[in-house]
Length: 308
Image (cartoon, rainbow, N blue to C red; front, side, top):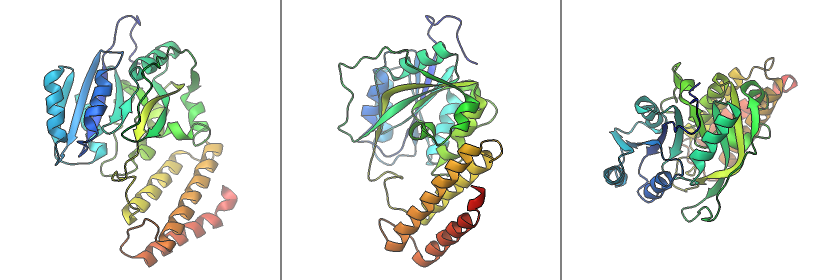
């Protein structure tokens, strides 16, 4: 575990920011990182082939602050942008921030302190959902020792339970860099990359600590991948990710988690079936075949329900 012997000796933390066509938001995101109370940072801005002014904005910030490193690459998707960041990371700890979101001024400090205090390898915080006008209170300074400490196995056993909202996403966490050394990377070309990978990262850790404060603002945009219309690709990749996760959460090893995940998948199937049937915010080439595909999935899960 990458842990200094003395908390007073600052460790370098690598903050990896994936950037793609978010010129309206990226400056605010970068400012929130530059304004962190913990200053020993390597800020890696990965411009994933932006066609707007996002890349130039990143370059302009790099001129102003030497902690910033900008990497321009051809568009390969969010997963590969994060993987590029991991490749260039020098810090003992890693944090992934989406380039249209913002973090609390003490995001890094509090998560790092929680990791150090609990001897954990992953720290997780709660988050707010907002828009480009949402901000943290300027007067809100947090000094807390209210942590929830879990072994990684305990967290996996409780997966998709009371920590559902904060467990899977990549961006509300601080990670020991060692957790990525055995080749764990985000899967290329997948929309639901977090669902496929986060539990594997947790499985590699010794302990996880949860900070019960909202230190991250997740910006909901109508033009984002998740905010856009439901397509065949999104439907199939969502189900593929959930099915892959169920292979990991074997019913004999994690019975409670397995059951909750299967119930969650059934809810998704019914939700997708309803949306496709009534064509609510859906854009698919063949509604009938997509409906049949989902119907077969639902029927199979119903037949296997006795094993849930």
